Image 1 (tube, rainbow, N blue to C red):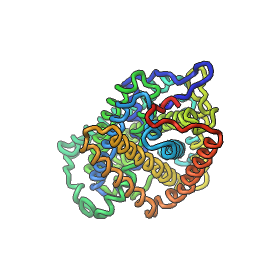
Image 2: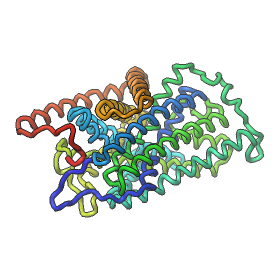
Image 3: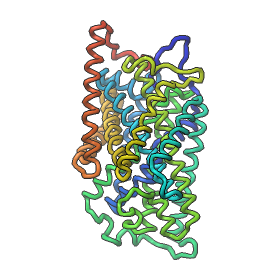
Image 4: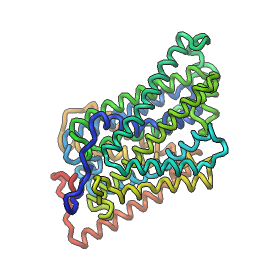
Length: 467
C-alpha cells in the first residue's frame, strides 16, 4: 500500500497476519459473484457455465501470479497503484487508482443490495433500501476499528462461507454419485438434458463470462492490503497464489454441483437475481430448514465481501492522498491507525445503493454489477500491462507467464466489448464512460497544476510506494 508521510508519525498499522490476509482475499472474491450472480450466469450458459468459470479462473490465476511476482520484487512499493506508477507512469497510475476506487465504491452498493435480496426470503415485503442502509452502517463501524480487529472479523466472516462451500460440494458429490436423504443418485443427466450441455451455444458461454469475471474480482485486494501486512512480501505473495487456486476450485465445483443436482433451467430461476441458486437448490430438494441455513450463509458472504470492499476502497483513497493525487485530508489516520476520512467518503456507494433500491429496485443489482465490473476489468488490464512493462525492465525468465498475460488482456478486453453491446450491461457500462472521461480530465488538471507548481516528476527507478 502507498503510505504517505504524516505529522507526528501517524500511519497505517502492520497488524494483518498471514491467515487474515488469506481470508481477506477469499472474503473479497466469494460474495454475490458465486452465490447470487451465478444464477444469471447459469441462465445464460446452462451447464456449460463451468467452462466459463474455468476460463475466468485461468485469467484470475494469471493475474495473481503476475501480481505476486511484482510484489515479491518490490515489496516496498506495496499496492498495484505504486507498481503502475513505477512502470507505466503517473498518468496510468492515477487513472487506475481512481477508477478502481470508483469501482469499489459502486461494488459496495452491489453487495449491500445483495443483502437486501437475501433478506426477502424471510421478509418479502421489506423495502430493499432498508437492510442495505442498516448492514452498511454495521460494516462501516467494523472498519472503523483497528485493522487487526477488522482482519479478525473478516477471517471469521470468510471462514463461514468457505466451510459452507466445502460442505455444499461434499454433500452435492454424495447426492450425484451415491444418493442422499433417501433419494437415488442423480447422476450427470442434468448436464445434457433440457437443451444439452450448452443450450445457447458458444455465444451463451461467452455471455456467461461477463458475470463469471465479476465472480473472480476481488483477488487483487491482497495487494492493497500489503501496507498493513506484518511481512508484506512473503505473506502477500503466498496468500495471493493460494487464494486464487482455491477460488478456482470453489467456483468450478460449486456451480458443477448446482447444475448436476437441479436442471439448469430451475437452478437459474429463469435468469432472475431474486434468489441465490444455492438457496433454490435446497428449496427444490424439499429441505426448508436447509434453505434458511444456506440463506444465512450467503447473507454472511455478502456482508464479508462488503466488509472487504469498504476496506479496499478506503485504503485506495488513502494511497491516492499519499501520492499527492487526492486531497491530503484523505491521507490522515486516527489514533487507531484507521484512515477515517477516506473510510467515510468510500461509504458513498451505500448511498448509491439505497437510491437505486428506492427508484429502480428490479434493476438496481445488475446496474451496480455492470458499473463496478467495467471498472474492475479496466483495473485488471492495467495490472497486467504493468507486468509486461515490469518484464521489459527487469527481464525475468518467464515467457510462459508473459504469454498468458497477453492472452488474459485479450480476454478481458473482449469482456468489456461484450458488456458494452449486451442488453443487461450496456447502460451501466456506457454510463461509466463519462466517469472514466472525468478521471482522465482530472489527471490532466492535476498534471498541469503540478507543472505550474514546479513539482518534479518521480524518478521511475525509485520506489514510489512511500509517496
